[in-house]
Length: 90
Image (cartoon, rainbow, N blue to C red; front, side, top):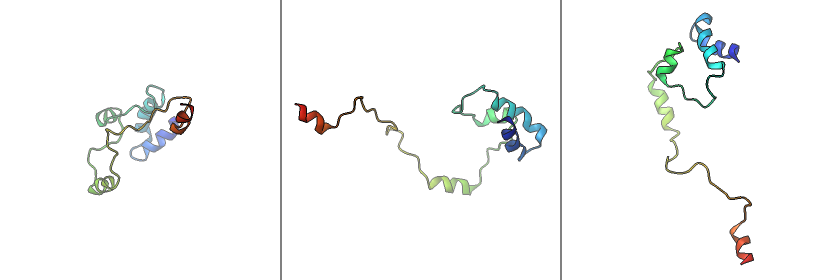
């Protein structure tokens, strides 16, 4: 994994500069869902920029995010019974 990440980073910088952040990212410090914010990515030595081309924003506008008030997971009690099955017992 470290070699793969090193190669990804080295695409934007040299291999020697890519080694340190690749090690940090693959040594098990964080889980896969840990968000690395811009400042942290920069401090790790990743070749990041805060500037995005206008085309990126236009592309993002094509895929609006869901309303944050809508739950993404629905709780269904176990054992699951359809409403019609419950009414049949009553």
